[in-house]
Length: 117
Image (cartoon, rainbow, N blue to C red):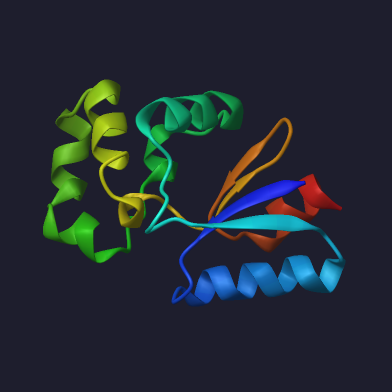
């Protein structure tokens, strides 16, 4: 079964969960704000995903902008970036979907269809 980290007030998350429901795909939801992944878990997800670490950041979120991360991230080490991501679930791109052998960040319908259908 999939694990989906979401934020209930996020319209993209709501759209993604509806897509899963419409396709009959079972999943377990975790509130990313209340129960966000820790540093070691994020490292594991990143390794499985094959994605650049920047794809794990919610670049449109308020904390990202408030911290000025667009300018700071390129100067930070991966270790520093993982530590920062683990401090606040609102910094993590959502929805974050965890499968048996894949990880998806954000809701891109074509990417989801390729992995889930």
